[in-house]
View 1 (cartoon, rainbow, N blue to C red):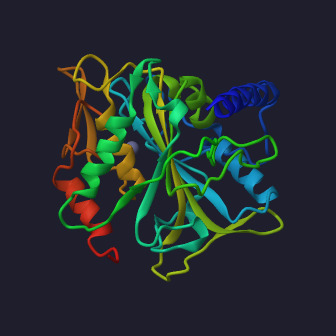
View 2: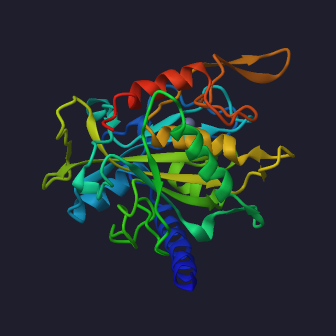
Amino acid sequence: MRKSTSRFVGVFAAVAVAISACAPEPTAPNTVDSELQGPAFAKGGKATGDVVSAKLQEINAGLAAAGAGYAVEMAEISLGPNASVDQAQIIFAFDRTLRLSSKWVPGDARRDADGDNITYMNHMSLMTANGALNAEPAIDASFGTWEHVNCSKLNLVKRPHDGSLNSAVIVDNDGTPFGNPFAADIYTLGFLPGFFFDVFLGPGASQNVLGVTFTFIFGSFDSEGNFTPSDIDNNHRTDTALKEIWYNDDFLWSTSGGPGEDIETVAFHENGHALELGHFGKVSVNLSAGRLIVAPRAAMNAFILGTLRGPLGTDNAAYCGNWASWPN
Ligand SMILES: [Zn+2]
């Protein structure tokens, strides 16, 4: 525990150094692409169309240099009630040509798969929200809710935390992970200061993003750093390598239905992404009421608008589409 904590302090410092080093001189390639400016999260900011993140590309450059057999593909973000309707819901690492939905491959040895089970691990030292609230029971309960959807026999198996920082996103300066990114299929890093959201997702994210799920896929980098995804099961989907989930500790959180964002609601949403559900539902503004509305309402709406700890119709349909035919 002590080792893990001190290591994380080191990571905080490393990230701070990286920012101060990068901030004065943003990369200015000849082909200035507005997509590379990063998402506009500030209230009222527009992030129309696709958003390709220079930060995610930077992570992939590190993975390429390290000769890794995987890359980050995207970050799906869950927006709080104060976010604006046109904010980006997904941030991509690649341009459109490489954007294919990815799927877990049953028994995939590359990720140390537990047979046909999907495994998850919680980073214990960051399982506390707002400095006092134990979030882990709510996170575990949300996995259980997905696991018990009737159409599927998928088993979600919890692996005990080994004490290491197994993040695939927060890595050493040379791109090397601190721990083992394949310690489990789904790694919940936990509740991080909003600062991390601004750094990794774009300025303003700390105010609007409740949670984020990063998707990494298997493949190979060539000598120029270009990534080719794999499809070893020939299902015309790229192969998921791992998922990593963060929660924004700048928000007020709750487990009891009191003031604050309901942890189990947001965990159910993020774990839906980990189980390869995307966002759905149309978001609009009710001007007279001055608030956002989503239709149809679903756990997988990009905006989290109140407590919803289980699947509704579209959530069930999407989950069953992914998992009813999973082999077990
Ligand atoms: Zn989401």
